[in-house]
Image (tube, rainbow, N blue to C red):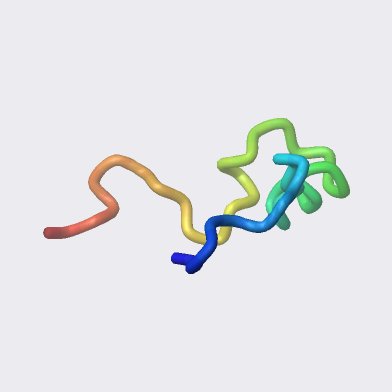
Length: 44
């Protein structure tokens, strides 16, 4: 939380996962994320 709000940006963020997805040619981002969120993977 910043004191005077956020910094100016264009609203475009290319994440690491999307770069890996582009470099490897994988079509689904869920195949390249390091900690995939799958149903039942979190135990509460």
